[in-house]
Image 1 (cartoon, rainbow, N blue to C red):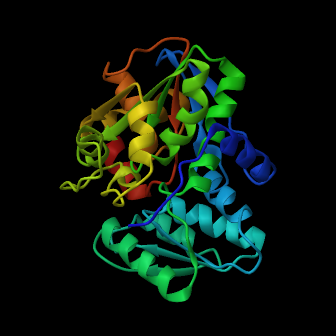
Image 2 (cartoon, rainbow, N blue to C red):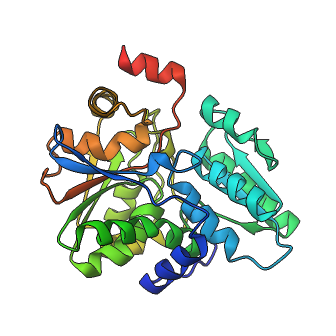
Image 3 (cartoon, rainbow, N blue to C red):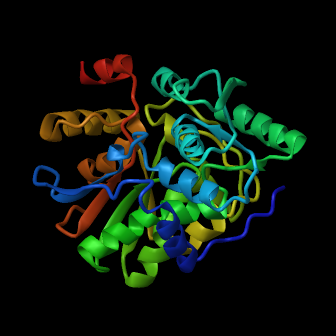
Length: 310
């Protein structure tokens, strides 16, 4: 089991300074039809918030260090994008079931792409073994103090725009984004509500048990939130104290949110990014002018989008 230190709010602020100029300060827009605001992380250069954590981790490295990452797609894109700009050697491991659109995007970067295993859990296990074998730095998409700190920069932007008396609705897979946001938002008085797909309840089960537990994961539109959690992940104790609530959304609710974002805002959003909007539309989180949903990514295949829209 890897030992990962829990980051602090000061780490989030330091990470934001390191990645300033590398990532985008994304738009925060009103959604009258939703009765809430949308933080559009889908506008990041890789199409996802994950580039924040990847850039934060890679800018903290000593010169000459190589990195290995496991990813459902978006974290790998963030690592590959940051590695190219910082001239760092990177290997990204994805499962055979990874989204075709994310695989296509990954192949545009010079990072070494390894396709291994039938699901995310197998890809992560292989990436950990590769990092140990090569003496490389393993950069987890969630169980990494620098990555969590980088993701938390979303929370700083939201606090600056809206103040502290707000409700932030955040997608949760491994919990890195919600942990980072919670580190800065919770002390400021904000409510942080996590959203998971019903098909992948790993974080809910782990929070209930007080430790990481393995669950059965089914196929989901929110592929970026799917999979089990690394044993001992620092995100479980962080979220146990930082989350105000954790709700689950169905596949039908995710699909409805994707359609809503296309219809009302002209936004192409992947299932993971639409999950917070799904929770609001389904009435699982209260919608107010002080509520903001983090729309975390846009990387969805044309075939999946067409099926959802149909």
